[in-house]
Image 1 (cartoon, rainbow, N blue to C red):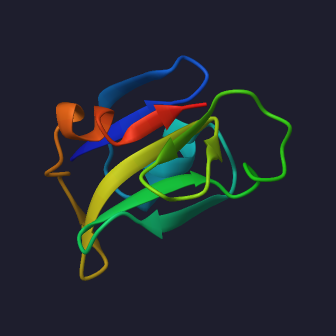
Image 2: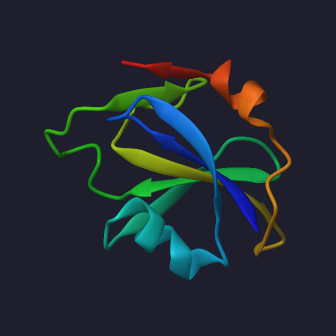
Image 3: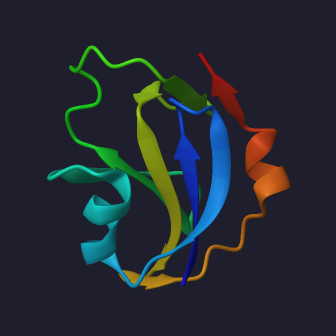
Length: 98
């Protein structure tokens, strides 16, 4: 299903295809993934340790705490993943690279 990848190191955003929660760690290149809500249907998933790592490439979406590295935005409804309905243009206006 369609998801969006925000790459803080490259300061870029792109579409990615994920099959579910198992793919998140692979796309992000980490072992431990956590999530936070963007709205009632969309969540952002990122490295659990991104807040304590001394990593460059931080970015912020809306008023969420800055995230280091990469994050995946996915649509999750009733615990099930489905294709994200947000467009790249929509997210670009909400992301600030730090």
